Length: 388
Image (cartoon, rainbow, N blue to C red):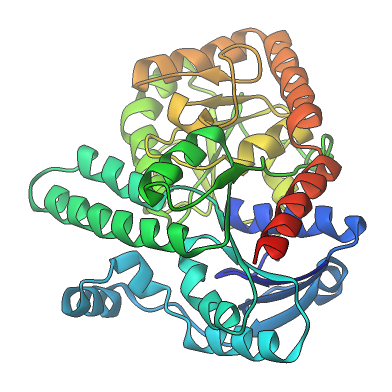
């Protein structure tokens, strides 16, 4: 099967969960015989040899709109701000050119923000399969609940605009793939019966090596940040509400923050940039922290922690969509005190960490095997192409 895949991020280097999801998906599809041409923005630090093993890359020089410029456009047009930021004319032109000149079986739009860039390819007669990494409007609705005053009103307005556009994009696609049953149900509601949403859990290898060296601290706690608002809010929650309590209980602990969004210099927090090789963050003896209170989709970092043999503590929201049971594959903590309790329990009982990792690896093998993903995804893709 020949697939034209349109994405708003280059999968390499896999410095965040969305990029890692795309990289693992392409890696799973290649051995199954899929020939993927990827249209995505150009990025720095790309290993082009590795990318060429995953797909035929067509990277386009473009840039995301600034926050202010996107805000002005959204105010003038009524378009959701997050979609105004991800308008990619050059990406859309390249996708349309390729679709008109090569015999692709279908086009895949990676996430809602890529749907507009994939539209010219669909206009050229290619069926469109939309893979939703999450439910965008749900994230903004959650952010509005946590905010106060004018900010809450602005976030709620963005959520309503996104819900309308999300429903329109879902209904207009020839097929929709979600990462979890929870997301599939929410997306089907947004589409108002106008889309068939099918679930294909993300692929991930069951075992990967640990990082090459331990990180400072007893224990070393790993926290991933980013400019993505749910991660930023989770980072604020942990540093403001959880970390002071953990510092009191575990004075030798250190937090290793990778690609953090807040100012450096917090006591006991060691800042790192975004690692080109994520193995550096999954060090021997470390604990992964997932303190998100706004979440949709699936936490790829949790899958990676299982594969690398690192136990994790997460909020229930961060673990949603994976079928995680508290104490079986991860420890779950709702609220600052319970999150701190879970970290302390894991430090006090190292054998518990080993049991959590083993439970996670069993789930990887059962639900996230790359060959299983490829079979399910390509089966859906073939049906979409035939229906079209």
